[in-house]
Image (cartoon, rainbow, N blue to C red; front, side):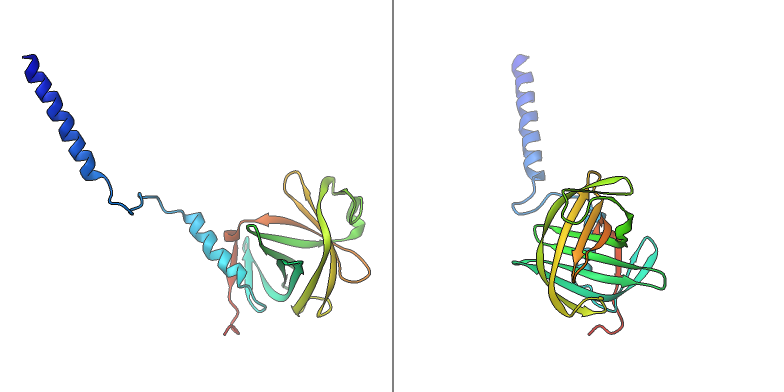
Length: 200
């Protein structure tokens, strides 16, 4: 009787092994994965932001701005771009960086008189009770296209700050005086780009 149970157990093991081998995917086939909706949207949005041009329209949280101008920066091979956005009520800047990773941020101007403490180049600056720590500063070459309020090209001094909760503060000096802006990092899919009618 014991030998019969042994044969049944061995047969069951062999049957399960054959079934598992038949279910194994062929070499080169990747396992099934669910669709990554956000990831797919991010890829499409990233490409649209890389190709952003004057005359396009950009939307964020239901608000739309026209892209009026573009500034391309180069600091010893490190490149980034700022696009001037405007509508009837306000102006914004969207900054696109694509160096060690893709990052997009949305900015609006800050009056120097609204700074509680500190100035461009200081280790810490406080705005509206929020403390910002200096991240980097330097000088870059820039070239302008469209309406930017700057010279067609030249040098810009800058100082970038960040708060503990990720808020951004930036200073730029295109001429003799500093300009300040506050910003926030966005996910690319949060911005929608509508190509302008004058595209090639």
